[in-house]
Amino acid sequence: MFNEPGAEMHKKPHISPAFSFITQEETLEIPHKRKKLFIGIPKENSFQENRIALTPEAVSVLVNNGHEVAVEHCAGEGAYYFDNDFSEAGARIVYDKSEVYKATTIIKSAPISDEEAGLLQPNQVVFSPIHLPVFKQSILEQLLAKKVIAIAFESLRDDVGTLPIVRSMSEIAGSYSILAAARYLAATDNGKGVLLGGISGVPPAEVLILGAGVVGESAARVAFGLGANVKIFDNSIYRLMRLQNNIGRRCFTSVLEPYTLSEELKTADVAVGALKPINGITPMVVTEQMVSHMKAGSVIIDISIDRGGCFETSRVTTHERPIFKKYDVIHYCVPNIASAVSRTASRAISNVLMPILQQCDDMGGVEQIIMEKSGIRRGVYVYKGCVTHAPIAKRFNFKYTDLDLLMATHG
Image (cartoon, rainbow, N blue to C red; front, top):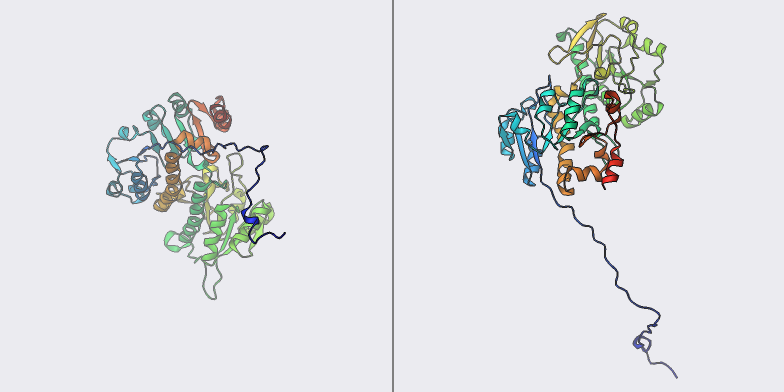
């Protein structure tokens, strides 16, 4: 009548004949076949280019992972990296530039020159910056003829969509601009003898910054850190709000309204131009008349000079002769500011490129990483005989090929 304790546990399970067990296929990810790289790092001959795109520390990581690296003699001296630093990291030092260009992957810190375009080998991969205003059709034609994969590293995006190399160089430019301004305010550099941050009883210098992007934010951080009084102009309310939130303090901000800008420039000791370019050209918002009303001995740092400049009185200067005076206002208009702190800049570029090169190995080569990572595709402007950068194609009247569609077709 009563079931014994535990009787339910000993009952056999009932299996209906309506059910059948079918084995399921397990899908496994097929690992990519690793592909080792032969990397060449040439010495840059471009004027005032002191950076190198891979540091000895990065070379050591790549060599220890099985890659071959060839470095041209004295390639890193501008950043105080010497041949023995690279050789100790496992690189091979070569004395003939043409030997470097036998590598399958070329890494440069300056744009490709006419001479270097002639040294490129068919089907090579080139990581380098590209300076659109001076980019030549003759170089483009050689890249296309040799079916080179050319990647502009300032257009590379990371997994969250930012431009890591551009951001690093922008931080450097913004920070250095204030240090340069502090230098040229000093009487020892023909300035009017003003200490940027002032002291007890003496007010600080007035710093005006045009642009609230990464460059402007970095400039503002350093200026605030040195004790200056900072005023920031930008046409984007969002960027102005973001800058204040990132810095963590309230400061004078304004849209780029000509009357207010003109009045504030009259009292500024330092004016920094850091506006974003529009269609490749920086908006010129400070007229010559505005500059003529600035205080004698004040300093203009036009960081945007490589895209035309923010000040009507600006003209390109060099690291050897970085300044000139107009209306007794000191103008600093060096386009490649990051080259002044080449060791810091080299490390920043290397920190981005080295992991990408390592991923090329993990994913089975450069072509595979281009196919799988949209952020890398964004940097490709020439791909195996096709122009994949719309502005370049339009400028030289070449056929434009959408790389995403090209990848989908070959995928």
